[in-house]
Image 1: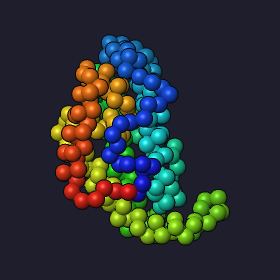
Image 2: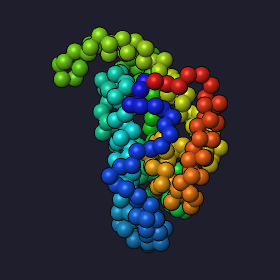
Image 3: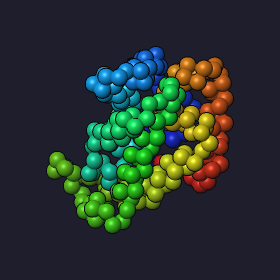
Length: 222
């Protein structure tokens, strides 16, 4: 299953939001210090919205390479699932800082994707037993897409293992992988969050990629 480019990339793309670290720090401070339930709820909603577009980009990449999931699920469905998970998590834990917040956000995205790949990769699932050549709007899948459907259970299994391998990384490497791959933060943004140089982030990302590849064992999903 393709995600629209190399799975392990050298750098994340900057998005139009720019660096949101300062805004997140202010919201976390308000979340931790305010006694007003309405103010806390507003802070949580704003925090979730700040990473929403990052989550949307990842969901879109995932659907682009997955005919079966795309047949039954839209980008907004995946986005909503991940954002609801994050909102619930923020209701039970207040992150200490931006790094903790992004760790929590990446975890919720990862859990949503694991559940999704398991659900659609299960041979007993509704989707697996109701695939047709027809799209929801009446158009037909191309012959290439029909062929991809036949191979998709194996790819979905690989993606489940991919996310589980990330889960099993040591915390520093898992945090960095989450910020780069799941949330799409740029290396300069990550440097601000971690309080180090961009050069250090680049070196640590190279080391994290090597560790992940060694633990994943086998070809990466495509």
